[in-house]
Image 1: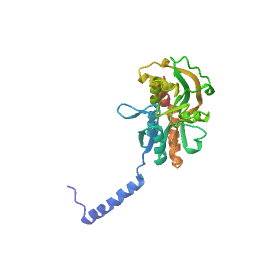
Image 2: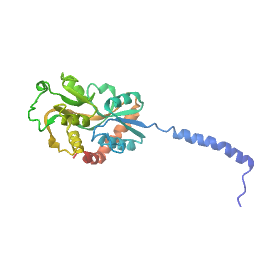
Image 3: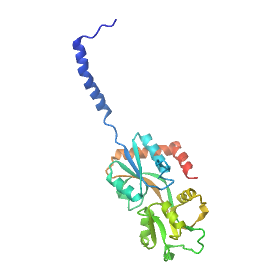
Image 4: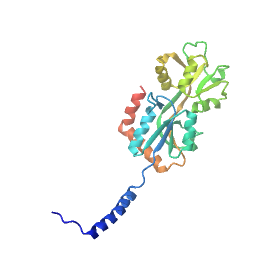
Length: 258
């Protein structure tokens, strides 16, 4: 039979236990705060599914990156204007999918690239009366574009005016429905987003006819606040680079860009 410890030893052990636990907790450090991933409905890159769960190529990629880097992650999907405001207001946030432009270069710390970006100007294939090949030929016609998006700003930089030549909507799906209803003549869309949104309406890609390329020289990135710890930015970039090296990025890409 084991002999019980003397009372003095038991008292010392009980006094030492809290100190030992405190030392272990101190060594472990505080739990890392979640990274707030903030995005918009821009399928198939990022969107809410029918169960109101964030999905899409950029969403899944960020989840893989966060897991690779050991960073807890929370996701929010909202209209683009609100997404930009939320990312500005919340610490430890990442805004995506963000077009990296000269105007935005100094506003974020960048991780990427996520994917190439090719914006086309489309008309309905049935509107054979429309034959614009450059913006100076637009006349009284209007182009649908997502309000405050990079495409919107690029179109405004050419001299096109919101409310006149530009019909600004909350998202691509809204603008496409307006185009189909005859409320505007043209629409600015990513090529694969055009196909995705048409599929949701059970319409073939041939419903739209591209008339000109607006922009094909840029890519999408993740944008982190300027006050984000540079170590976190490097961890996320290293995670993305690792995913591209080991083939997981390409396997994910093939699920969405086919």
